[in-house]
Length: 287
Image 1 (cartoon, rainbow, N blue to C red):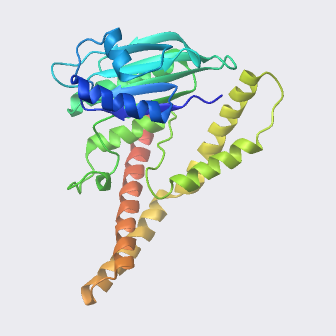
Image 2 (cartoon, rainbow, N blue to C red; image 1 turned 90 degrees about the vertical axis):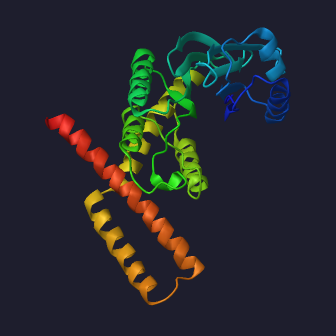
Image 3 (tube, rainbow, N blue to C red; image 1 turned 90 degrees about the horizontal axis):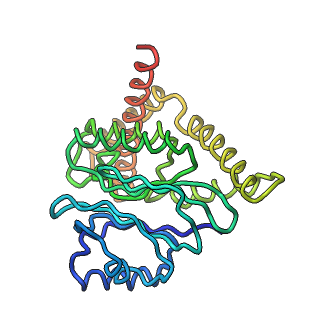
């Protein structure tokens, strides 16, 4: 059985009407694990949890809000997973779980990120500590309060150091940032094809562990093949954007051409970021 996880920035649970709204949606989504960020609550009681989630077998851990902001609540259905250990940090609530159906061990971390670059570095260290402590397959849900690329942030055109740090953290912790638009369906289909091609013998938990290991290797190979020679990609994309600029100087771009140019610019942002991460990793390795 695959647990269904819901992660949601609710922007406050301190009003009953908001909790009822969340409760109605969670009932519709039929989640097994729920991570709510920005609860804005310093303390979370049984009555608050019951008012948010109608699951009668609920357990939870939470990170208290700092003043009137922040706060993370992680809840789960005890019939689906059993908590083994928990970690509550400055920005993170993490739990190691055992799946009831097959005994598989894994971890989940819920995050509400800070807004300052200095505190973000503390968050990256916090997540790295959780990752090394448990050494389990894991996933992270939450609101990091930072984007990876300028195109994901309204009115922002510059690649900031915080974006580079965020992407580097994703790489170092062996995480996969699923694309939120465009390529998500094709990426999921690719993963499904890999997964269905794996065949192992043994207990369900052993088979799942071997499949996850095989998937990790396929993802690494896909990453190398997809990004390849970053320098050559940068040159190619620069030529394509320059050509589109020349066309735009002579006439107005059509709607399709404008969309294509925006996609080129977004691709260039990703290439530049990958180039920066590559140089950072090389400097650490050889420095």
